[in-house]
Image 1 (cartoon, helix red, strand yellow):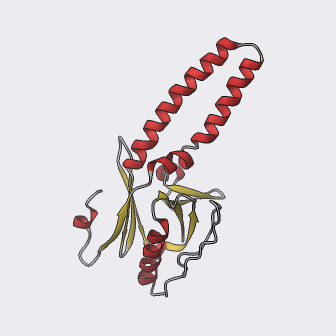
Image 2 (image 1 turned 30 degrees about the vertical axis):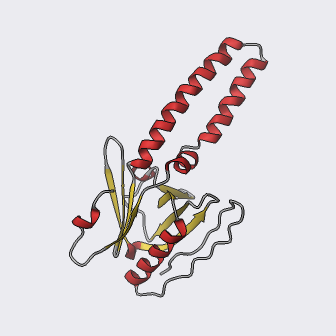
Image 3 (image 1 turned 90 degrees about the vertical axis):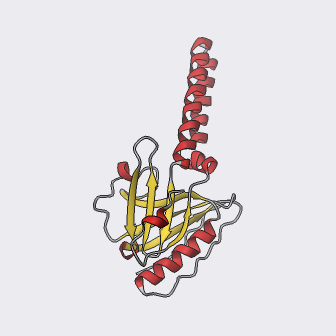
Amino acid sequence: MTGLAGQLPEGERLLWEGSPAWRPFLTRVYALPWIALYVVALVTWAGAAGNWVAAADYAALALFAFFLLIILGYFSAKATTYSLTTAHLVIEYGIAFPKAVTIPYRRVVSANLKTFRDGTGDIALKLDHNRGLTPLLLWPNLHLSGLRPEPALRSVPEIQTVAAILSRALAAATDTLPAAIGNDAQDGQSASAIVAAE
């Protein structure tokens, strides 16, 4: 963890700090299953056409690419820290070039919760405006709503607990009542819920 608590302004408290679970992060953010499916189809097509040399080349290249993706995804997840304070969400990320994005709760219009069977989930934040937040800057900690990037906590373990903490923090920062977080997900289906509203 980053030790963000020692760097906070006077009067601001750290409520929660955590990182993505690397296996779900790799699966969902880096889309490894879809890439695997594409490569299997490519190798099968080359083999069916009788071009076994090309099929072997594709397979070797795929194994190398998978190895690199797994390493990249693992270290990317480990290098990412989400911090919820009484006033801000702070996203710290980046392997070679660490970056940080700080989002004041007063800019959050709503938060969308998506849960998964393994207990992890994503929370995407809809902001009042996205000036200065480009997909390139936010990736992989983003959700795209149309063409509009939304900062997001990705593949967070114990997501219901984190969502409840965020809901209370947003409510306290905007002087509203905490919103109830419903989750109708069944058997891995995602569910959306309003975490907080204006």
